Length: 320
Image (cartoon, rainbow, N blue to C red; front, top):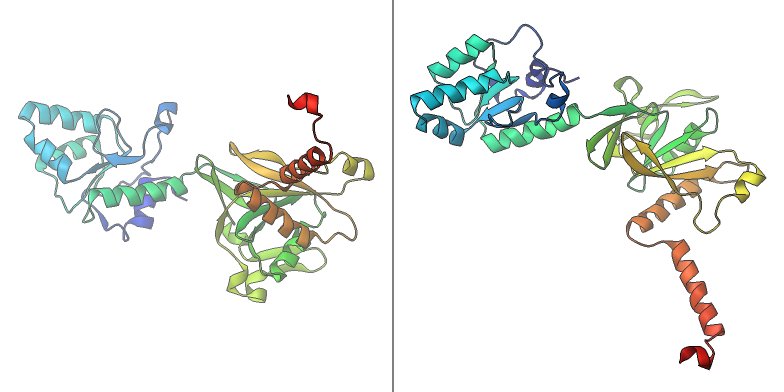
């Protein structure tokens, strides 16, 4: 889990060629402030004293700017930089900070790091990593599986048959991401990425069979580490009256909200004799067509309307 500067450097330091210029802090250095305004600020960016980042990057341009300042302006800028208590100041391009910066860092207990990478490359890597590592997360009960390239979350009451359906889909060539407790992270305004907790990875529980290791049974191609969520299928044992309430043209398509993101949701009736695996594949294909702008229900209505207009043309008076 990434929650401090030390854990960030431990996971990315070798890849981003980061090393400490000051002693590594003994206490965890949080990457996110506790105040509400801190949660809205950028976590990583170039030197900015007006909208300070938690991780301030000093590259060639920032270094040239600081060197061009007079003594008074330089002191005021550096004092403002360290007064805002950044999580760390990182020097890119192999830059070595001057004595004044080292003195301010020591006085304010601000960690300094350096990297041989360029500033924009360093910012892009860290921003991508922090977006995923610190994304808002939620665990949902269900089975998360990839079907025809779409991330599908199977939900429903216990013992409704989610795991059995997932197992049949796996035998048909689809891939499982997580059983029982998939974890979703909001990595973009309208994008949820689903993963599996480490302790549950590769496993699927099927009642009567117990715990199955899908990777060992079906090979590497049967499991997937992560996938974006595109569709939710809610398995429900509906009675005749409930079935009659489902629109026969548009079906049961609605939307469910997870972490503030609306995800298309389909209620799929569970009944003896229904091949749910084929129905799930059909639902996914149908959703893919919707995404591409085609809706079979709308097409059917338009076709019927054209047929009616041909069979019953407008009377002459109405055409004038």
